[in-house]
Image (cartoon, rainbow, N blue to C red; front, side, top):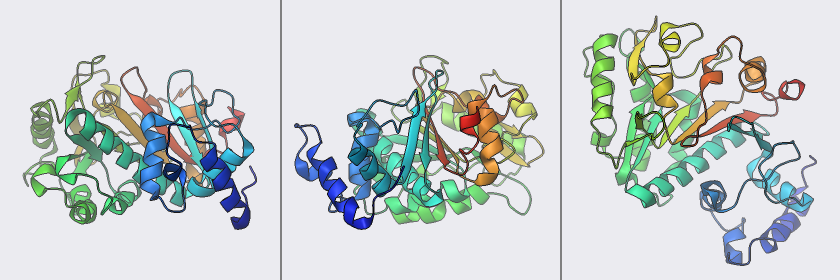
Amino acid sequence: LNLPTPATASMVQWNYQVSAPAAVPPTAWAMDSTPRAVWASRFLSGLWPLPSMGRSGGVVGPTTRGQEWALAATTGLVDSGALPDGRTYQVFTDDAAVSNYVRDRVAALAAQAITEKGYFSISIGSGSTVKPLTGLANTGLDFSKWYVFFGNERTTGDTAYKCYAGAQEFVQACGIPPKQVFKVGDGGGAPAMSAVEYEALIAHMPSAVVGRNPVTGLPALDLVLLGSGADGHCASLYPGSGQVLQSPSTRLVVPAEGKGGVTLTLDFINSARNLLLSAPKASQAPMVHHALGGQNEDRLPTGLIRASPSTHMEWLLTVASAAQLKAS
């Protein structure tokens, strides 16, 4: 895909604008004057499908070269598609484009959940997957309706409660009520007890906040936001660990083996309405190949994150991390 020069990009944007469905006001496609989170949310909420960039199995959408250029030039998206098992993937130019997508996708899903049921529940981790959320401040989202949980957390040692601490910049910038940001444990530290308490807290949330998955029967968050490692771990689910091997299970939260903390279970993660799994690093290319493009013989936890009729699952990749997929 040859990206247009800035001069060409402005013309491509115009071509893209006039190609919008007739029912959509032209101003909705004026990308130079509409905030990214606004027009992106229109795409990503399902109002218009993402385009296929030529890979077989891609999602049907805009097909002209001008439309592909416009999307790539403004979002960094260079490829997208869906696997037979329902998992989808988006391939971006670089880490920054992945971060922008995370921000805009979360905005779209939050707005959708609040419209549909009055609240938005999200599980987050730490680091690069959470940092983009600070950019949601001052976007007009109703953060009084957000309920924030943690997909994993250390409860002992020098890094105890690092995920909770790392979320404070995002939480404070967006004005999420502190009582709706649920810290794991209450200073007790013991992972086993913290897991039981956190599971009970989630299980007893009002149904408008945390629904129920009609397939698994487990509670269902609106979104679980996951990072990943080159070893195939996500949350605190590591290859070969007890918390992975015990699946299937009805548990929601369990102690993280050898990590001094807790993690959401595979089964609870896979019960969410939406899953975003980020793997943008070049060092993750072999893992992406095994988990997404192969048979996942090693049972990498990332490869066990699944789509279902009630769960939409997206892998967020870069050109570098997707480099081995075409050999799959």
